[in-house]
Each structure stands twice: as C-alpha cells, then as structure tokens.
Amino acid sequence: MGQLDGKVAFITGAARGQGRAHAATLAQHGADIVAVDTTGSRDSMNYDLATSEDLEGTVKEVESTGRRCLSITADVRDTEAIGDAVRRSIDEFGHIDILVANAGIHSMAPLHEMGDDQWQDVIDTNLTGVFKTLRAVAPTMIEQKSGAVVLTSSINGLEGGANYIHYCAAKHGVLGVMRSAALELGPHRIRVNAVCPGVIDTPMTNYQDVYDMMNGGPGGDRSSLEEGATGYGILDGQGALPAQVISDAVLWLVSDQAYAVTGQAIPVDSGHLVQPGFS
Image 1 (cartoon, rainbow, N blue to C red):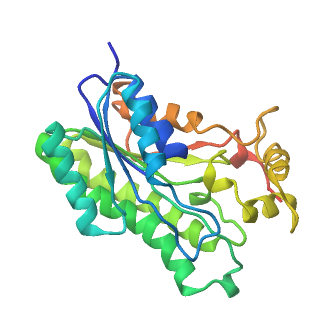
Image 2: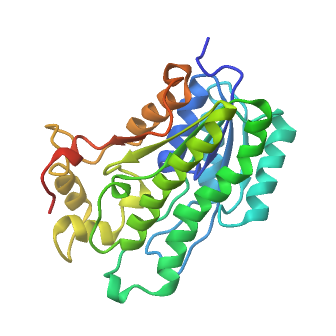
C-alpha cells in the first residue's frame, strides 16, 4: 500500500519541472492528482511558460502509475479561476488532502532598471498566487479537520540575490505566508511547511539570463549552468539538482512521517546556506 493511498493532491505549476515531478511522485505513492497550470507567455519574461502539451504530459505520467489525474488550466493570479479549480477538484474527488503551491516564474534585471510590469508579474505569481491558492483550498481542509500544505519558496527566501530583487522579495514573503498560515491552521490539524530549493535543473533555470549569471557575465550557455552550479553547494559532485530531490522532500512533508512538522522552511540546496558566501 502507498503511504498516500486515498489522498488527493492539488498541485499548481504542475505542467513541467518541479510541479510535474511532485505530481508523479505523489501519484507513485498513492495520491490522485489535480494538476493546475497556465499556458502562454509574458512580456516581462525571457523564457516560455508551459504549454497545454506539457500539462498533458503530466497527466500521462500520473496515469501511468494507475492514479487519476484531473488537469485544469488556470492562472494562480486569477482569484475566480483558482477558486473554480478548487470547486472542480472537490466535485471530481470529494476532498483535497494535500496542497503543493508550486507555481512560480523568474526573470532578472538590476533593481534600478526593473520595470513595474516585471516586478508585478513575479510578485503576483510567486507570492500573491501562493496566497490565493492557499486561501481557496483552506476552507475544505478546515471543514475536514485535516490537511498538509507545502509552499514552494527558495533559497532566495532565506538570502538575497543580485538582479532578481522581485524574486527574492516574493520568496521571502512565501515564508511569511507559511509561518502565519501554520499558526492559523494548526488548530484545524492542518500542517503548513515550505521547501526552499537551491539550483534545480528545470526550464525556469535554463534560459540565457541564468546562463549569463552563472557565467559571471554575458556569453553564458548550458555549460555555464552546469559548471557554476557545482560551486553553489558544498557536497562534492552535486551541481544543478534534479527536480526529484525537491519532490522527495515534499513527499516526506505531506506524509504521516512528518505528522509533527509544521511551520518549517526546509532547504534542499547541497549545503549552500552554510557557506560564508557565493559569488
């Protein structure tokens, strides 16, 4: 028997990257999945968002485990859309036991050159979208007096970063949401935690701005990410980590093995945070 048998997990940003890995992992351990993502592009970003084909790929991965998967196209910035996604999930499965609020985007610019749209897109998705998703799911968990929530923050929720002040602000804010929600929802037997990924090898880290950052200046490429990430942590041989390492942490946090864990930010960063600095 899987440790999540009978559970339903609502996962945002599920079409690819960490979100897809979370969906597949929780399904492998017995959960049915609600896979939520948006498609399209945004002018403030230098890489493409997920596609409908990506979301369908997640559905196929989940269904290959023998579990059910409801896919929903919705933008976490849209209060009505995310509320409707929750209602559809309850209509389909009857309950939501696990929330993984994972949807997020990334962009880069010096703070004095950052436009309002670039700032707002990241804040609205990475912070406000997390709040709106949690707000939409919380009532059904309160009613059933149980639930496990994991919010995706970042190592940049625990430290700053040059040229992505908006991303750091949002990810710091996610930890404030997590700690406050843990206080409010604990009396309802709902646990709320966060994961703080380091450098993870996903579409969000594979675009030119990140390559240039890892290169120390213009002209970076995929090898810049691979080589630069090896100096990010302290564990020998670890560079840009696979999304699965975050999924393993999520699995533990939503399982009964972590029944007494709430209000915690869990770094998965190859030991990056214990270093005295990173250039």
